[in-house]
Length: 242
Image (cartoon, rainbow, N blue to C red):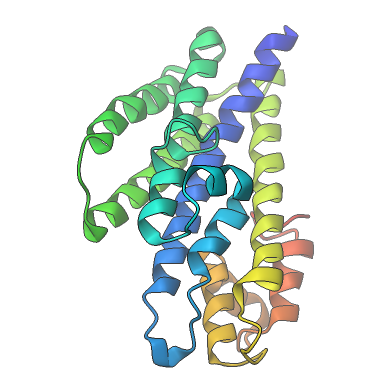
């Protein structure tokens, strides 16, 4: 296999996985920002979304204030953000086009169709309900592409370079989520183990599709130590670092 083919397959999968991750982050942040003020929120949710995406400096230069409108625009359609959902799908499609013969027709159709559909979303003025549907659509694009790769690719070097991209990106994303929850999200005046802390940890589990798995494995209330065990060490969990 040519090294440039392996490189493109690796990055196709990384960019698709990253787009899904950003959609999950924005979905979780919207849930957190909808908490009533009596629940103890301190308005740090949108800043935490930028921190989780690893683009604090670029965001500060472009917008300054971390509010819902600015963060959603920066992480979804902003062409100047290399890791926006728009750019992730554009780069994934560009890499895929360069190695078109290394992909199955189902994989190419999933990516190319997603890029064409994205143009329609980009031109809309979306309210919250429409934006939530857009985030679900992004997550579905990733599931369709990943499922197509799993079900149709020959198990050769190309397949394993593609898997490598998925898992490296996924491990990085899980580590970022845990890091930001621990260091950024909970306000300094809030109690560890309090109602807000509990809701935030539950939202983290929802982000990585692990809430049901958590209860199956531990059969206990949500506890940070057990969440860390599940998302770092548990090899049965698809999104764990292990």
